[in-house]
Amino acid sequence: MANSHKRETARRKPRAAAFAGSLAVLATGAVVTAGVLGSSPTPDNTDVIAVDRTIAANSVSAARELPVLSRNSPRGDAASSQLARLLAADAVAKAIKNADTRRWTTAPLNLWARPDKKAKNVGELEEGEKVLLTGRKYDGRSEIVVDGKARWVTSGYFSKEKPPALGGDCTNGTSVPGGVSPNIKKVHAAVCANFPEISVYGTFRGDGEHSQGLAVDIMVSGGRGWEVAEFVRANYAALGVNYLIYSQKIWSLDRAGEGWRGMSNRGSATANHYDHVHVTVYR
Image (cartoon, rainbow, N blue to C red; front, side, top):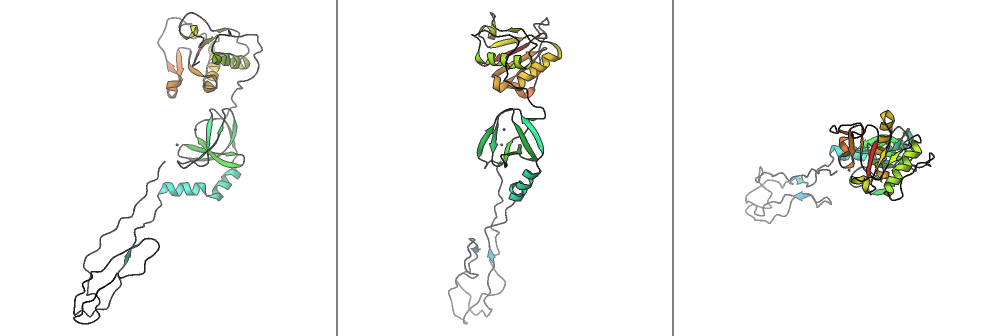
C-alpha cells in the first residue's frame, strides 16, 4: 500500500579582484568615496560586487557599472518535472476520463492524494474491492479512480480474478468445537462456504498448536488441496493466519516474500501433509 528530491544549490563564483582599466574619478588628484556600483537592489536577493572605496588618483576613465551575480539558480531535476507533469490538472483529468481497467484488491490498501512523500492519507480500501485503474504509476504506487477522484495506492495488490467470498453459510453440517480460537472458527466458516464438499476438520488434539485451539487440519488432497491452501493464504489477513502447510511445503507470514518453501521428508503422506491442509492462526 512510499521520496526526497535533491536540490541543486547555486554556488557563488569568484570574480577577479582587479578589473581592467581605472575606476571613475571626479577630478585629478581627488580622492572620493565610492558606493556600491550596479543596479538598485532586486527582490530576489541578488548579490552585488562592491568596489574598493579607495579610488586611484589621476584616472580619467569613465565610471563603469559592475555586473550583478545572483544566488539563485534554476531548479528542476527530472523527478520533480515528472511529478509536476503527472499531477497537472489536465493530465489528471485525462487519466480519469480514459481509465478502463478494473481489478480487485488483494489486501487492505491506504489511499493517498498523491504518490510522493508529501501525500496525505485520505482513506482506505478493503481487501476484495473492485477498483478502476488509470494505468499511471509513480515510485511504487498506482493511480486509481475513487468517487471520480484520482487516488494513489501501493502497486502489486490487484487481481484480475474476483476473490472468493469469505462470507456465506456453511451448509454441509460441519462445525468446529466452541473452545477453538475465534480465527479457527473464521477459517472453518470461510472454507466450508467456498468448498462445501470438504466434511472433515481436525482441531483439538494433544500436541502443539492443536492443543491450544490455534490449528486446524482441513482434510483434502490433490489439486483441490492447493485451491484450499491458496484460498486461505490469499485471505491470511482476514483469517489471522500465521502459517500454512500442504504437500510438504510451508508458507509463513514472517517469510511471505519467499512464497511456498520446501520441507524435509517426515516419512508418511499424513506427516508430509499430502492429505490435508494445516492452518495455524495467531489467536
